[in-house]
Image (cartoon, rainbow, N blue to C red; front, side, top):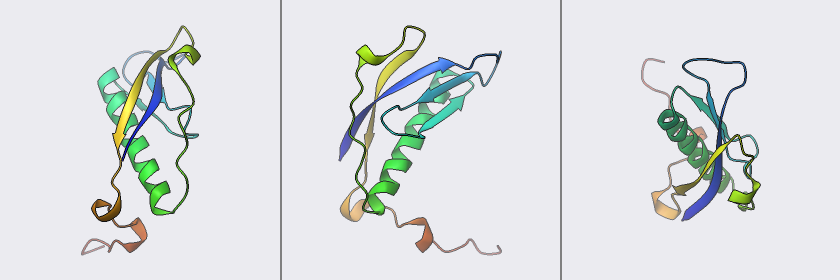
Length: 105
């Protein structure tokens, strides 16, 4: 299953230098990430969104429906569509609770 959500990126106010970028997916409450560069922030946000949505699917909960569009983005932000491929059926990973601890831990 493929889903598309709007991602918004901004500089973190009051921070200079590396690590001053943040990214959020407004249609998915709590889904956000930071990074040292735009590329790193985008990759981190993509991973966070993918893992969060797959966790909802594993729990049998509904996925948030995308509702925001580019018209909703404030002038100070940079926006793009993040596309994630969600594993479904037999290609899903087992829930974390079913994983065994690493040897020696």
